[in-house]
Length: 202
Ligand code: FE
Picture 1 (cartoon, rainbow, N blue to C red):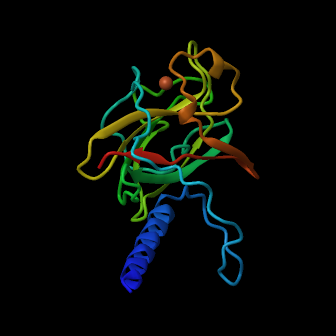
Picture 2 (cartoon, rainbow, N blue to C red; picture 1 turned 45 degrees about the vertical axis):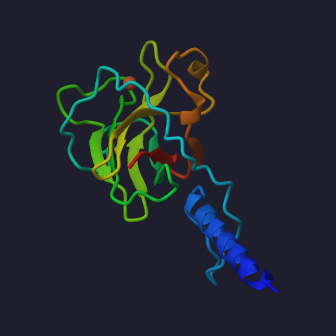
């Protein structure tokens, strides 16, 4: 007799779990058929209560970068790279308008320490999605290939970290390298695409 309320509450709870799983789904750009139906199930959720691993900013960070999502403007040579993903909170919610501040070496392995070549900040959209265009950074002594980034939820603490490239020989010897910070990198018609989802405290 008392089963019906209990079952319905369980059904509601299960629906809630479904919502959380949906919110935590690692987002690659969703591909849809012409009818709008997804062509595949979302990948395994990647979000948990652990924020993205923090790393040193290193010696080349400069504050007050310009707002721009095309960091490659004015850079000659190198391989075009588009980096995209989402910023999520430790409670698996998208962090709309998260700030990302990016700096990296150029194809020559040099940082621009007087200007803003390959330095810029941008904001995620309302769904926490971010995207910036750049070039594959060159190598410099002592480090594997990497991109520096600071990520901050609105009014949240700053996460300073670095992104890495799979398949790099120096990943095995760089003492700062962490495989939890590897981007998924695929080839594109005009270069490469890298994806990474950040988890930040908000
Ligand atoms: Fe660096």
